[in-house]
Amino acid sequence: MSKLLPGENLILQHHPHWITIVKSLVSPVVLVIAVLIADFLLLNPGHVYVPKLRTGLTLVVAAVAILWAIVVYIRWRSTTYTLTDQRITIQGGVFSRSEKVIPIDRVQDCTTRQSIIGRIFGYGRVEVDAAGAQGAEVLSHLPNPGDFRDQVFVQSERRRSGVGPAAQTPPPVAANPSGV
Image 1 (cartoon, rainbow, N blue to C red):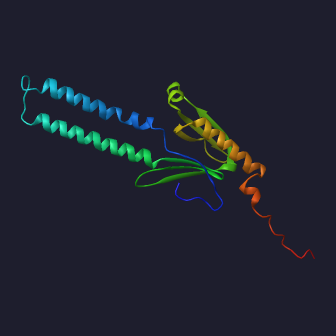
Image 2 (image 1 turned 45 degrees about the vertical axis):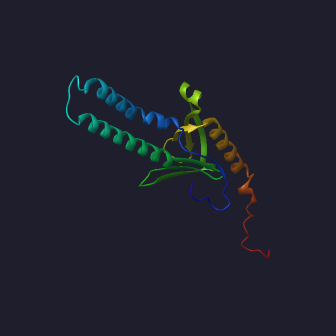
Image 3 (image 1 turned 180 degrees about the vertical axis):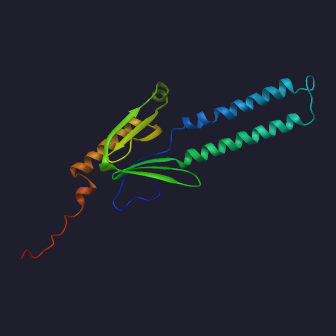
């Protein structure tokens, strides 16, 4: 999150879990392995030989795999989940940015979901249901989803009960301060 509001305090800020990078790199790794197998087994001079096909094919596949990895990393890095004492912000996008802001005092429910793999590696899905919103906002592949959920409830309760920054604001001034 680039800017905090005046009087706003950062509680948590996360990118999606690193497992999203691993999942996204499965395809290029399989492609590189397939090309290496073809390179050593099928395109050997003893089998089928096409001049410079081995080198060209290997370079093209390596370039595609490297480009793919760079795009995956940039996409992962550009997605941010932020929790402050006033709001939840979900930011995403590289060239065009999108930002979803949920005021913390509008949060009605916060649900976590974790698969067995998510429990092993420490990531999950958090669904934030806010008053007036069309359906829940989903934060997928969030590291430590239970901690995020607990902090949302703590901050939401503080805002609603008047404890914290909202309670420190001065009371409104009466329209007639002289009392006459």
